[in-house]
Length: 311
Image: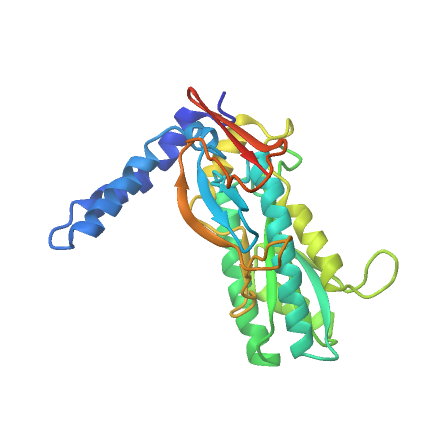
């Protein structure tokens, strides 16, 4: 059963699909661009629930330096707003990356601190318009601060709540690395950059009174990354509008060069994990005969084929 109104979703995505169909019809652009545009248009015409059904159904086999060790990394549907599996995976993965980025930023700017900003607008009930207004306001706010104080690293996440009237309300949570600044000046800059807003909040300390650190901030932002819109307080119509409004947008945004390159290592031998060895389509996999077979770590049933991953 689909978590959204498929008919409304198709209607909301129709303008975007028409744009890709128009791009596919352009002459002299090359075969690759034409095929890409056709596939994008075709994907926008499929029911949304088909993406959720494909979560974890395929993947990549991976290996490392452990003799005979093989694993699998399933492909996710990447619909973290409505998929519980993707919400948990995204929260853990992005939380770790946010912590590493903040630790690196603080190391390069000694004496500065992490400040949490919460930005919101006066409630209008138009999720798509509010998201664009907040994004435009943040860009103007950053340019103002850049001209006054210079560049600074930041990472932010979006949050959407039903609102008192159930029509949806957007928030923006941003962690910035700053020295001490006059909050009143920053507040005036924000209200000038985003006239639709009515407030901005600053938090530089945790509930226990200690200064915010990369771990606590990563946990705080990760909490919002794990929140979806599949709870009962979101109506089906509101879910559909949020999913359509967030199409092809980022729910995590950062300053330039914030992310730290991540190289996955095996927890057994500490060797780099080599991915994309073989495409996994549900065919049975047999590990090296020299390795004892234990209880299956993962079982996938795809059609009439049952696939098991052993340690």
